[in-house]
Length: 244
Image 1 (cartoon, rainbow, N blue to C red):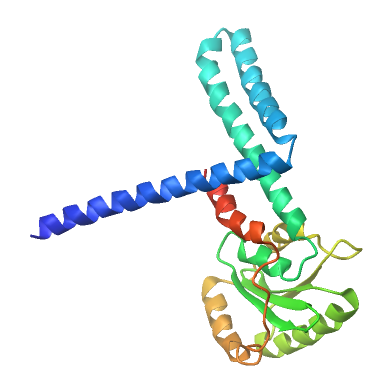
Image 2 (image 1 turned 45 degrees about the horizontal axis):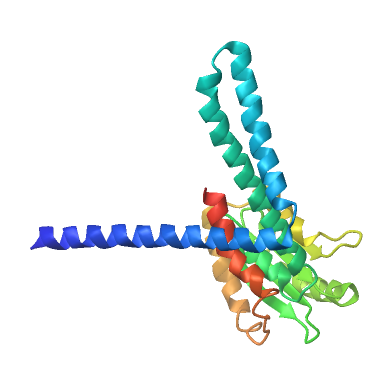
């Protein structure tokens, strides 16, 4: 009886994996079609990347006399280069559409890779200005978005409030935008991930418990569901591309 259950569970797991794989391929194909319609340079660039990489490796093979051995290797690396180029073009397109829309920074933070603990809209205004909180190895990161003259005060208030809770834990702050001393949306994840590691996992857990008391105070702040319908759909596509 137990063997039958195990066999059934294994079969169901295989079906689930196949379904997930099929869904990922479908998402990538849909993203490709969407990007191809909006980005006329996509196909020429992908083809060029494939030809250049495959051609270089084949040329090296000709020089050393192993061209037919390096040809399949060149094809594989050429396909990889084309896929990477596609992923970057999709990401650039998504961030371009999201840039400047309310909630875009929170959306970008939710898509960060790694064990980051993101709390969106810990502070905000009715005009669509928000401060988001990120907890991770660097410490506490506050990310503000909105009108510069409003978010500056909003960010300072939140930073002062956080300092009373986290003690000596480093607090970093960024304002998302394209003006001087601001961080462009497309570079936000990169800037945060480059911050130094100051905390151990146990310290992060303890700090998160202390922060839980702040949740009730910010419960009334509402964040828009997303900066861009298509961007939301692209989230799983980007993750799928990174895993390939």
